[in-house]
Length: 123
View 1 (tube, rainbow, N blue to C red):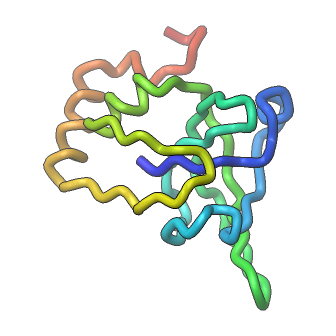
View 2: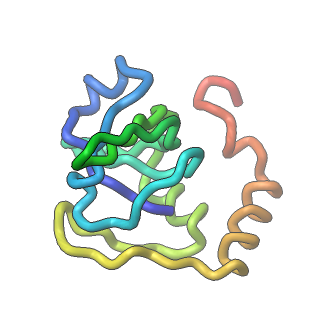
C-alpha cells in the first residue's frame, strides 16, 4: 500500500473530508488511479487511510482529490500490506511492488478479522 506525505497537520485533516495533492508533490511516485486506496502521512507524522476520489487535469499538472478515511498506525498498515516497508519522509524511494500472493494473504487476514475494518467506536 502506497504511503504519501501531505502538507497538512492532523488538526486540519481531522476537520476535512478531502484533500488535494498535486502529482508533483508525490516525489516521483507512480501516478495514482481513481479508487486507489493509500495511506497519508501528515506533517505531524500521523497516518490515515485515504482513497483517490477524483483526478483533475491541467495543462501542466495532475491533481488528485483524496477522500480522507480513518486514522491508522504503522503496525496496521504493515499487517495489511503483509510486509514492513520503511518509507523515509520526502526522500527518494522506489515504488513498492507487491506480489499477487501478498495481496491475497492481506485480504484473507482482513476477512478473518472483519472488526479491523470498522471505524473506532463502531466495534
